[in-house]
Image 1 (tube, rainbow, N blue to C red):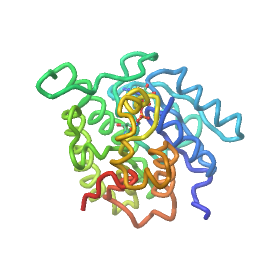
Image 2 (image 1 turned 120 degrees about the vertical axis):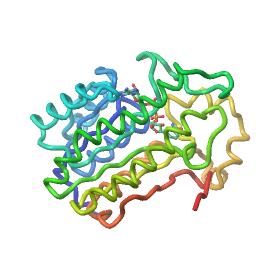
Image 3 (image 1 turned 180 degrees about the vertical axis):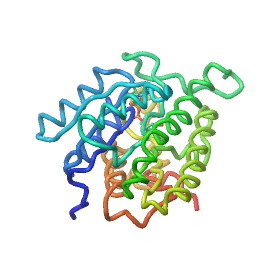
Image 4 (image 1 turned 90 degrees about the vertical axis):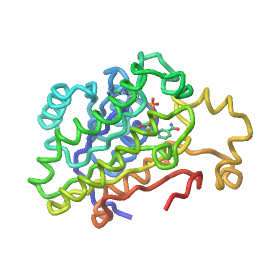
Length: 264
Ligand SMILES: NC(=O)c1ccc[n+]([C@@H]2O[C@H](COP(=O)([O-])OP(=O)(O)OC[C@H]3O[C@@H](n4cnc5c(N)ncnc54)[C@H](O)[C@@H]3O)[C@@H](O)[C@H]2O)c1
């Protein structure tokens, strides 16, 4: 199936590893030119290098998505290299403390949490999405073509213990997406959310290992397929929503979760 997005330009945030990295690889396979963002330049360059070696076009662009001037400078740099951003994937959503940090500090019970953790989580998820969307939405509207895809979490749909602030912030992104979809629909720009449940990435491997066999019981498809979610599951859904084929879909939340939650 031709997705009709060859030559389009995508910016994917937090894409130096994990789900974002795979979104970049999948979009590049469809002929999209990809700007790989990450807080850490070396991670962004690594993903971009992988795409280039496979024959695609990509650049690594580091910026902290919570910093609006830095985001604006990044979007300008992407425009100089590839032209305006057609597809924005707001993927950065797990706060990184350092480049070597494997399991960032989002967990723990609410009663043990405090402002420092809330600010880190809420800041990245809400301001990251606000800043990056603000930087590209006007241009998309002027050109009458655009896709904004926000990677949320089933935590934001059904709530997840030990991830209270994270659940709150991700739920906020759903409201943002629906409201913006109503504003920019007349300009042929779509805004949707893709909602993973547990997906095997560097950020979750230690936690998944600690869960043992019981985690498989929470996912109706896990036993049959003998696996949990993979970054490619999320990337395939993103590619479809980014495509020409998805032009009539906006303001929606698509869970890609092996059946973990089945919200209305
Ligand atoms: N992995 C899962 O099980 C899972 C489940 C549900 C939702 N999600 C969502 O999927 C997305 C990706 O998750 P992942 O597991 O691939 O995460 P990850 O931690 O493996 O990768 C995220 C990347 O984002 C970067 N990043 C962090 N803060 C940043 C900032 N301020 N600016 C730019 N980049 C920044 C990190 O350096 C990292 O390379 C997140 O939004 C997460 O909430 C993941």
